[in-house]
Length: 488
Ligand SMILES: Cc1cc2nc3c(=O)[nH]c(=O)nc-3n(C[C@H](O)[C@H](O)[C@H](O)COP(=O)(O)OP(=O)(O)OC[C@H]3O[C@@H](n4cnc5c(N)ncnc54)[C@H](O)[C@@H]3O)c2cc1C
Image 1 (tube, helix red, strand yellow):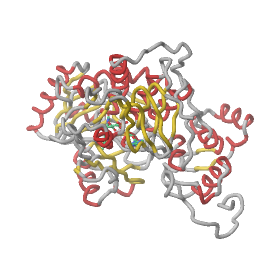
Image 2 (cartoon, rainbow, N blue to C red):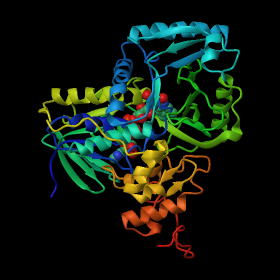
Image 3 (cartoon, helix red, strand yellow):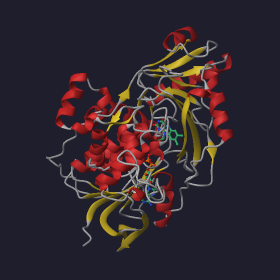
Image 4 (cartoon, rainbow, N blue to C red):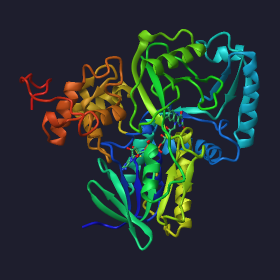
C-alpha cells in the first residue's frame, strides 16, 4: 500500500539531503527519492568543494544571501555530522597590476553582502602563506571565512542523519511525472510506483527545470555548464591554500586548492553543453585547466595527476537561485538553478525551503527525538596504534587491508555497506571510505571489493556495479582464482 507522505524530496544531492535532514527536526513523514544508486550522484560529487566566503554573488541576490548564511552554518554542521572541513581562508590572486582593481571590487561587493574578514594582502605575504604560488603574484584578496569541505561525506552524512531521524531514502528511484489532485501537486510517479504527499520539493540539480516543466512551469530554464578537473597524488604538487585567479564573467576561474583529504585539485573550466549527463572530460578542456592552474602554481607536474573528472553547473536562465512555491502548482517547491556557491549555500537553502513549506501551510511540530549528531565510522588509517589494535580485537576485519594506497580495511567497507544509507556500489564505497582514491585508482582493491560487496549483499559478483545498473564490473566468471579473486 502506498503510504502518504507529508513531503517528498526529489534528488539526493547536498540540497535534497540537507533539506530532508532539516525536515526531520519536525514530526513529518518525509521521503527522499534519488534516481542514482547512491545519494551524491550528481553535481554534489563533482565540484571544487570550497566553502565560499560570499564576495562573488551580486548584492541583493538570493545567491549572495544564502551563500553568506550557509557559510555561517558550516562549522556547526560539520561538527554535528562528523564531516571533514578546514577553514584556513581563501585567496583571490591578482597576477597583474590591472587585476588589482578587481580585488578592490570583490572586497567592496563582499562588504555589501555582509562578508566579514576580507583584506587585501601583498604578493610577498601571499608567497609566505603559499610557497608554491607564482612569485609574480602582485596581491591577493584574503577571505578568512572561506574553506574547504569533504563534499561526499557532507551529502552522505546529511542523508544518514536524516534517516536516523526518521526520513525514508529510496535509491534507484526516478521521478517520471508529478501527480495532481484537485488542482494541487499530490505526489510523484516513479519507475517504482506512485507516492502521494502533501508537498513535493524539487531538488533535482540540472534536471530541476524538467520537473518544473512537468508541473507546467516553463519560465525558468537550465543550461548545463561543464567544469573539468585534475586530481593530484597526495604526496606530490601539494598546495596549502585555496587559490583563485581573478574571476571571469561566467566563472570564478581555474582554482588550485587542497582537498579535505590533502590532494591538490585544479579546475574547473566553463563549457556550455547541451546534455545534462555530459560529464566526459576532453583534452581541450583539461589543457585549459592545466594552463590556467599553472599561472598560479607553475611547478604543477602532470606526472603527478591520478584522476580527472567533470561536473555540471545547473546554470539557470535567471542568473540567480530559483527557489519558489509557485501559485500555478500548489504543493510544489522548486529549488532550481543551484549552481556555485550552491554547496556552501545548501544548509541555508534547506532552512529557506522549510520556511517556504511552513508558509504554504505545512504544520511544523518539533520532533523531540531529533538527534542532530551523527557518529562517523572510524577510518582505520587515522587511528592511533592502540585504537587500531582495539578495533581489530573487536572485529578482525579491521585487520585486513583491502585498499593499500589509502589503507582502507575490510571492516570499514562492511560498515559502509550496512550504514543507514547503504553503500551498494564500488563508487559509493569509494566516496565513504576513500578506497580506490589513491595512486593506483583501484587497481589493487577492485577484485577484493567486488567479493566483499557480493558476499554482503548476497548477490553474484557479476551483479556488483561501479555506480548502479549498467556499470557491472565483471561480465562472467572465467576461472576460480580463490578468495582474493572474483569467484562466486
Ligand atoms: C564545476 C563546479 C564547481 C563547483 N564548485 C563549488 C564550490 O567550490 N563551492 C560551492 O559552494 N559550490 C560549488 N559548485 C556548486 C555545487 O556543487 C552545487 O550547487 C550543488 O552540488 C548542487 O546540489 P544539488 O543537490 O542541487 O544538485 P545535485 O547534487 O546534482 O543533486 C540532484 C540530484 O537529483 C537527482 N535527480 C535528478 N532528477 C531526478 C529524478 N527525476 N528523480 C530522482 N532523482 C533525480 C540526481 O541524480 C542528483 O543526485 C560547483 C559546481 C560545479 C559544477
